[in-house]
Each structure stands twice: as C-alpha cells, then as structure tokens.
Amino acid sequence: MSHKTFYLVLLSLILMTVIVVFSFVFLIPKGKEYRTLRLENKKEVLALSSSTEEKNILQAKLQGLEKKNKKTIKAFKRPFNAYKFIKKYDKEFQDLFVSEMILEDQNGSFKVYEVNATTKIDSPDVFYRFLDNVNHSDWIIGINFPIHFEKSGEMIKSSFTMKVHHFKEVKEEIKKDEEEAKKEGH
Image (tube, rainbow, N blue to C red; front, side, top):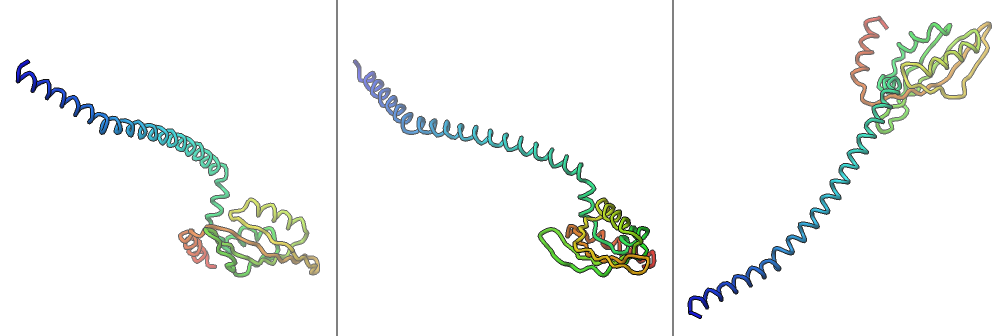
C-alpha cells in the first residue's frame, strides 16, 4: 500500500467517523424532536378544527336564537319612554298616569327602572287585557305585585309598579325619543 492510499483510507475513515458522530449527536435527536413537534402540531390542528366546528355550530345556534327572539332583543335595546307608554295604553284606561322613572338597579350591561302607574278602569277585564298586551309590548316590562285596586264610584282605581329592563347602550334612542316628544309638544 502506498503512502497516498493510506492517507486516503485514513481520511475516509475519519470522515466516516465524523459523519456517524454528527448523525448520532445532531441529526437523530433533531429528527426525534421534529417528529414530536409534528405530532403536537397534528393534535393542535385537530383541536383547532374541533373548536372551529364547535364555534360554527354555536354561531348557527346563536343566529337562530337571534332570529327567533328578534323582537325581545329589540325590546331590550329600546329605552322606556313614559310618553310613548301612555300614548300606547291610554285607550285602554280612563286615566293613566305614569310617575317619573327611578333608576333602581344597574346590573352589568342592563338598566332596570321602576315605574309607578295609576289607572282608572271600569272593570278588571280591562286590566287583564293590559297585562296581556304588556307581554307583547315594545319594552321588557315586569308588573310587580301587589296590584292595588280601589273602588271609586263607578270606576276602579288601580296602582302598581313596573320594572322596565333595557341595555345600557341606548343613548341615541333616548335622544330620538326626547326629540320626538318635544316635537309633539309633551
């Protein structure tokens, strides 16, 4: 064997050793790390697709509920206006007086007003029709008990309190209602 061949074989063995060491020290651990990261990525992609599917289902349910309860949501957004209330229900009563609204509670994103009402009616049936109509009104109104009835000649005087609920974010609608009431002279 010649001297050049010996160096060539020695250099080849050294390079092979370096390649094997490099493979075991750097490439194999990085490959294992890559496989681990790839598995984690698959799990995250599955979780993301599952979450996206669940979100889409919930979004569809929400849109269905919003469509189904559109009137109720609209009623929550409409602020209570005593003038409009009297105008709407005045035809059912002989006299209808609504006292000033008192902000009773401010819970989270809702405001609750307490409204006192005094009426004169000729029979309790009129009042019960009023209660049915309130359930389909433009506002979310709860009539509080007790309701006081008092006979006054041929008429029945009733007084009761109502709680009116609406969202806090209705400033623009309040301004519109105030302007409308001013235009009509009330």
